[in-house]
Image (cartoon, rainbow, N blue to C red; front, side, top):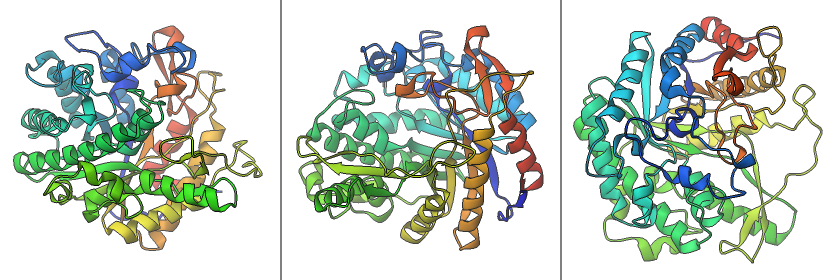
Length: 444
């Protein structure tokens, strides 16, 4: 059934990508390794031992990809800069060829009438900096500020929308406490230090961008999900509270409200120096929300954090998707963020993966993705109806890509990438659906 969405005037429809997931060309034109280049080489950490070495080869297909954005009709493109492509050692000598590549991206989208939304960090820390301690080294705030200065100086004349970080909860909790993501640690103290230093880096970068880019619009992108106990026990309820604090509070609370969540604040005290919280809590223009669904926690006292990822209850699957979804929780999360942080919100990622998509008659009939998008855009519409100050929606993702630990097994794009045939691009039915939504405001 077709539904007319009641989005506010000036609502931004966009698409999102990230550098390591699409660019490839990991050793081309002076780019140096990132922590993900190394992480992918450890056996068992990525599906089938796959890497981002080629990814979707966006480095060589960027013009075609920009043309596809124009064809769909998006108003904005959220992408990230690869820190080791522009600063191979993470600091010091600049790689001009890397900067030239992003000049081509920025100029290319602007020529098509698409606004560039630049994210400074989407998980690909230069390996050279990780060798110096990475996010566990307090000096990283200065390194990140210098990197932000380079980006502001080079692109601030054309780029006016910036995010400092994408999903810092994922990169730190999974990377330093759970060994799921790069750099691959299981160390509670390392996680706490990394999280606090990342927050300091965010504040430092906001100050740089605010000072150097006139009329800029600044935000940060958080993955926020409601957290539930796996079982109805006192132990799992405590675990759910801890996971909620770490997942949903450790970054937005100090960045927007100026304090760590009370439940875990004492854990951070050994790493906080005088004035840190004021350095972290800097004025922002918008809150970026990445949302997919609920998460579950179970008590596990063998871990250093006293919780572990749990499983959700068995529930009837959505008839068109084959698995359970909770769009009503998307509405609830938008309302929670609206009331807690009192900021304009952009949905900077939302989308649906699949591992059985195939090309038939020159297209991909991704009916499961259409069902997901109908349900979640309707949930977003309900949040707006209830008063949420929602300003935009960016689908994850423009392209099928390297999906971190899942490798290439899980396709999230609205454009199919034929990896076996030169990374040929094939629009899916969802790309046409999204184009029609943007043009008409109707979710069919």
